[in-house]
Length: 292
Length: 286
Figure 1 (cartoon, each protein chain N blue to C red):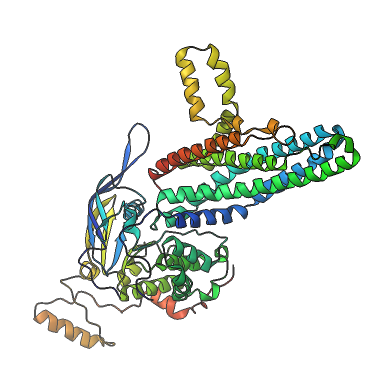
Figure 2: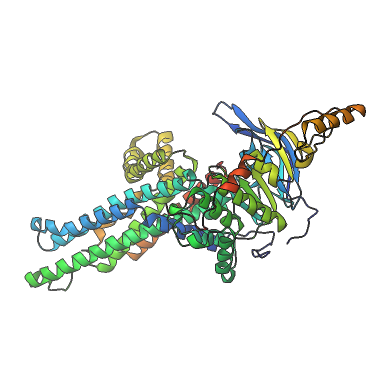
């Protein structure tokens, strides 16, 4: 496990990104004056509707785009430098990989690109493939993988060089609830290992479950940022959950509260969440998945 | 999982190793493309078919005909393969978004571009080697048959300089290297595969014919036009310099000085055009 680092994993200051739309100089502003600090060891959710600037921000963090104005640093190194990517793993949205390679060949390829020493490479490839639960399918061609398996092999290639920061762009897009839950479990495992995870997703329930902090972007601007628990809790409300209270006793409780100047705002049946119900009812597939 | 397996040093020097990894993967992808197999089979079939035309000629001219026909097939299919494979292998990375995953790793764009180039260059090298070897085998077989049939015509021994044919194959390979670098330069700023392929063929024609423009305008045109044509002559490589067909096989053979100058000419163009492709690609938003 890595030790907490005083240098933020990601430090974005006054970031603006414009794209030229045509030769007449008309520009599209994708991100505007974004300032964001993500400390090491957190799971951070970057949220927003389509076109809000999430993917552009991620590409700038990865050095795939350069900021028009402002600065982005990864572990204190400017993101335009190749060095900044030494400790970063990235799983793109809807990843396509080389279909003609097997899962283990693919992870091996990316491991070599990342400079994993040759004598460690085989062991490391086995380790991460086992970790994402694809050992049984490691020798199959990636072209035969299901969507969930593609996401998992994508996660394996992102982790092969043991990065401190992992960026996951829509890791559960198009994945069924079971696969999605498994990816959530993997992310929480990464957090327990002290990794920093930056994740974007439209599954807000999932983000709520796994993220420590979130930022919400809209039309390129940061509109909200904070700890998930603080943002979603209603500070002036409390809930009491009791076992099947008879109507008479409920009335008695209402009166007791009224006598003390409090109102019983709502009486509801506690509900489980649909995703939890789904996961409790369906069986999880064998590791390795079905052959397409 | 274990911790810290990769280097944590804060510098990433240019690495021939990473360049080789990208090149190896590009080569692997290329040989699994049906286009490569198709063009290779077609070229081999055409080179082999040169023998079928032997009824038209006899003696030394027949051997010259087979040689010219074989190299003609190599040039035609090799150029097609070079442009199509370079464009396809580049845009498959962009369109499938595998470029995102690679470039998000600690790798220089220079390594990526030259890795792509070397992968294509290796594919074209295999193509040239196979077609040249086949041509050599055909010529050797036919020359042996002619020596038996007409011993008087071969009283001084074999007529064909087989070493020169190999040099000619190497020169064609280098020419395809220049063409691959040009196609990669176009692809580095182009948005579509089709545009890259069309422009690649357009430039191929210019490179083959630019000497005509230089000859035509060099003598008669006004000074500004003459200078412009001269400048274009430097911008576009002259592919005619690679055509040493008259000097190969039968005759005095290829002068090693000329071979080295032409090879140097190709390598300089590959380095300069490749450098421009890297510069263009560095500014490209992925």
